[in-house]
Image (tube, rainbow, N blue to C red; front, side, top):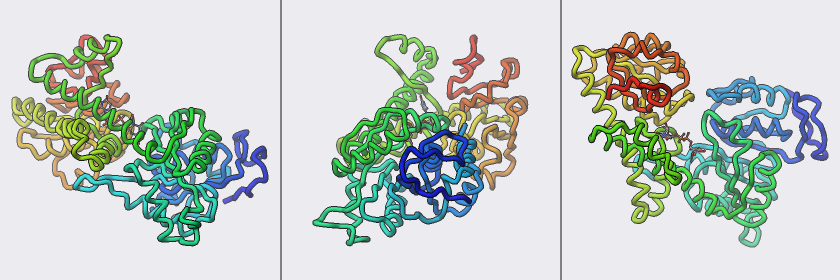
Length: 444
Ligand code: SAJ
């Protein structure tokens, strides 16, 4: 692998790459090469930065060094391959000393719904061990308010030589990622950013860095506010989805078509209701609001309630499906879509998986057929499930079913013709067919 020498000035053109780009003098290390860290690394490399990525998983590192993506994300495969071929990006299992470190590791919640920051601290400690004075450490992982300040305090425990007059010699800033899976390449480049350092100098440095390679506005604040901005964005969306999900349950009870209801209500100039679904999945919206609840349990009542409403939605879908299945002897139920949302292959925290698992163990279901054209194999959750059919082709999945439950609105399901749905019970949790055709073949 070619390693580009650190250039003397940012005007140098890189002859090795296909991009007519500027080479930036600062070197970057991104710790955590998942859904955020890898696209960030590849795009930084494309923008002329010399980037090394660090990830604990050997397979991930090996596949990146071969220019291969280890998850699906539109448009990223080519960018990654070019970044590696250019010599601007390589990966290893441990970080190397650089000018700017970015932490992009997962921050899940524990069983008792407390933020689990072990990966952040592990990444930070690996960085502390090698960091030089004047390094900049940017935390991008969604984190509870105060985390960036706490990391700066923790530096003294690992590297007392990097503390002078009680202050860290390293700059620390928080700059949350805000990109949506499925559109990551575009959104990393164009979304506005909020950047907050623990000092004005750290804020200014981090802001300058993001302005050098992204096109959106970069808004400067302090670390605590930037941390809360991120949690607020995802909580706002969760509360909005909870409202839509609650409406859908109310509508099922009172016999109103929720999609028609929302379509009409949204014609009001100041109403914009989101879409109901089978529940909220993914590793962000279903998790981050709990960080606010953990910090202010007596105050965060609406935020907690929204989480509970969204978490309860899969049970409602299961109930509805079992009522439908009970009307048919040995009912064959096809679940269309297992990912946590449309057009991604990501199964993490997917309500569709929970629903499919519950249907598999229900006696009303004679045969369960699973279909997700973006997920290549039967998910591991069903490894021990006897008698479940994995069907890659949505048309064939529908053909075999008495009850069709649409759990994810993948574009690939558009191949299913209206005629194919005739005579079947359709449970359309996303309003997929409602949104794209009239009259809709909804039977509930
Ligand atoms: N969903 C609905 N109804 C809707 C919108 C979404 O049921 O109207 C469901 C989806 O199907 C999915 C879940 O909510 O199960 C979350 O999907 P999403 O598209 O709302 O969000 P994520 O988790 O893919 O990404 C979110 C984004 N946050 C916001 O839109 C405020 C993204 O910008 C963040 O960067 C990301 O979380 C993150 O990493 O925090």
